[in-house]
Image: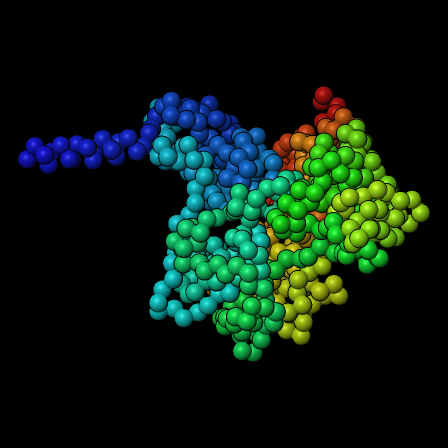
Length: 544
């Protein structure tokens, strides 16, 4: 009897140690839409949120890169991360927009008669600040097969969405790469990073959810009548539903010498590692002055003997961020010793014994070069879909609001999808953003599982250079005016990109959570009017 009682006591105390609870604040102290960091009984910090009259308690950090969520924005029933725009449901902690794959912990809240806000949480969750959902598994009774092509963000998000949405059939993720899905945006910021350290999920995670991952499986053809995919290695798979998320490949300049050794592109960890191994103490030339080129230039600074960036526009990022921001970012790089050759392109790569030695530009100048990396755009990997689905003139897959292609049972997601963007009055757009690829994967997976889900998101992307970030939200590929709040040269501003009478894009630097706040505003109300934004800025300045 004593042994039994002792065992019961041990179980009780073990259960008690598993949880922690305590009073964290008073309900009447909280303003609506306030987010407050509170200590929970000395065990750790939690985020207490009051939104639409309800009080919630959640993890304090974004599950993507650990951004402090109290510095973000609470709106529309969710918290948006200030760094990269991921959104979490205020009531459940579930991730609702991306990047990232996990939700955040959501704790039990009880408001007493005296207004005490009591929170009860698992100790483990307080310290993890991340909540990975338990996904469903395959059932032998279900003979359906969901095949996902591509191991990027869209593919990784899609297979999880299939299981989370209750799909009980076979789920197969086939990728031409050697690795499990990994965090591709890190490639241009840390060329020497190993793929294993960038993995989004472990082998054990996929096994636990009955998700088959087939590496080194490059699709070569799709038979929409037989519902069959053939692979380069000779394998074949039949499917019930097919999600194509094969992404794009870097373009190679069609000039003499582009096949010389050390003329490189950046797509895989092998590409990045090869460049990182070759650049130390060498002369490096980078072709392209947009996101990939500028991030790689920042990485090379201090490692290479010299770094030269060649761009076809007058300043970097001119088409996406405008001349003023582009000039500031160029000056930031030049202060680090990076040289720019703008308004030019490559005429020829020259070499000796098959190895690069010089880059000849269109103005006749020659740059010494031991390594050259090209960041001059991409081409969609959709060759296997010719005569299978409708493609646009660039080779992207034309899809509807549920990411369905013109062929029954075939969906497209991520960089290759030409999809209707609600924010832009359903204009067909193609956007190679990490956030959007995650989101597309979720939508495609839910629809393939039978849950009718439309695309409804506000694009959000970012770049990081020398430890400083620019964040951008909205969609404004062609702007005719830019309104600034703050000082661009001091690298602290918000920029409003206008087309006609609408503000269609917002960029910020050192002004968090401005981009997140405008993303939520666009999500709720669409593009704001240019006149209204100007009035709000005038009111703000008058109040300062």
